[in-house]
Figure 1 (cartoon, rainbow, N blue to C red):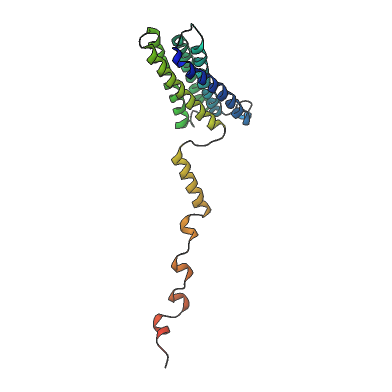
Figure 2 (figure 1 turned 90 degrees about the vertical axis):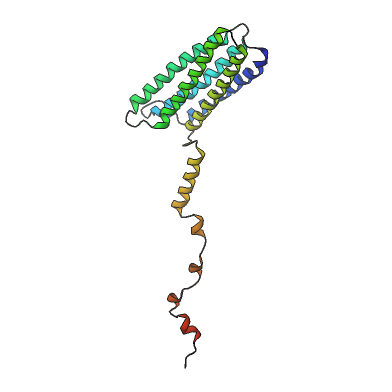
Length: 213
C-alpha cells in the first residue's frame, strides 16, 4: 500500500492513462487496414501494441496503488515481466516480417520500451524488501511518466506523424522550399537583375561620355 501522499498522483495517472488509451483506439481506427487484413503493416502493428502495453501498464499500476491493502511491488514486478515478454515478442514479429528492411528507429522504439520495463523490474524488487519504500514509490511514479511519454510518442506516429525530431522537421521544410524555388535568395532581385550592364546596352562608358565630332 502506498502512502497517502501519493494518492493524488496515482489518481491523476489512472485518469490520464484511461483517456490516452481511448485516444489510442481513435488513432488506430484512422487506418484499421494497417492492423488487420491483407494490407496489415508489421511496423504499424508493433507501434500500436507497444503504445497499448505502455499505457495499460501505467493504468494498472495506478489502480493497484489506490487499492487498500495491496502490494504495489508485486503488481509492478508481474507487469514488468509480462511487459518484457511482450516487447521481445514484438521484436520477433518485426524481425520476422521485415528482416532485411528493419530500420534503426523501429529497433530503438522496442529498446526504449524494454529499458523502461527493466527499470520497473529493478525498482519492484526493491519494493519487496520494504526498505526506503517512499523512495521506491517516487521512482515508480517517474517510471510511469516515462511510460506516458513513450505511449504518446507512439500514438503520434500511429496518427500519421512521420518524424518527432525538431531538426529533421526543419530540414524537411527547408528542402521543400528549395524544391519549390521559394528560397529567400530567389525572391529578391540583385543589382545585375534590375539594371543593364554595358555589354547588354551595346555602349561602353567611353561612347556615352565623349561627344562625337
